[in-house]
Amino acid sequence: MKIPFSRIARHLRRLVWLCAAFLFFASPAGAAPITGPIRIGLPDSLLHQQYLLLSEWRQYLINRLKRPVDFVLHKKPDDATVQLDTGKLDFAWITDYPNAHVDGRIRLLAQPLYKGQPFFTSYLIVPTYNHATNSLLQLKGAVFVFTDANQNGSYLDVRYQLLMAGEDPDQFFSKVFFARSHREVIKAVAVGLAHAGEVDSVVWDALAKVRPEQTGQTRIVARSVPYAAPPWVANTHVEQSDFDAMQRVLIGMASDAKGAELLKRIGIDGFVPGDESIFSHNIKMRRALGAE
Image 1 (cartoon, rainbow, N blue to C red):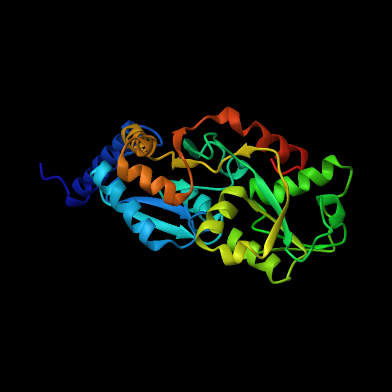
Image 2 (spheres, rainbow, N blue to C red):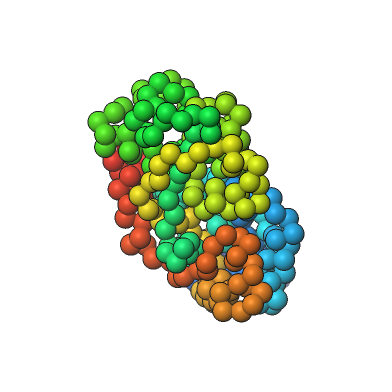
């Protein structure tokens, strides 16, 4: 009996669909080997456009991972988080963890060490010609500049301090604007576009070494309490073997000469495995401000 071609075609389509469905459901959920270059998002604000350093660090990772590596620099602090969430990046050094909109979709990989601890502080800065201001509460009615609304150690920290002092964070300053990078915050304060601003200590300290003419036009008024340093994270699609390899290389940087040299130029002491518990203060600030 001759079987009609249309019936054969229909059965073939069904077979193809069943094979595709089997492969989809048989694959481990949320994890797959990285194909092509490993794509890593980096915040421009932490590295100050030091392109030679970036080139050497990229080559270091290529040599240690024995894989192609691409760096993707981000001007906006939340760009890397968005690209992680959409699967365009495999790893990233981010500044806004933890965030509700990425909950469960990224994995904590490593924490940078600064002065031996996985914490940063923030500096409240004013222009050097301002000799009168000695605290945040003296800036009521001032124009204030932040990096970004997602910054744990800038925007959230200042607002949390005001809230704890019984002030309304939304009404305290006469004007607030966002410069999108720590370097631009420093510049805005230095030239008088803002009466004051707040920046991560590691950025100000590193910039003081490479651009002292910029930081020299500002004065540190106060330092915040320590909060968890901006971490390295991985997209949940990254397979465990790739996750482990990247974590091993980052943590191992402090143990070899080239890695230690790069860390010094970046402005940190090294990396340690990520620990969710050290984000307790960050989470406390976010919850108090309704940002979590």
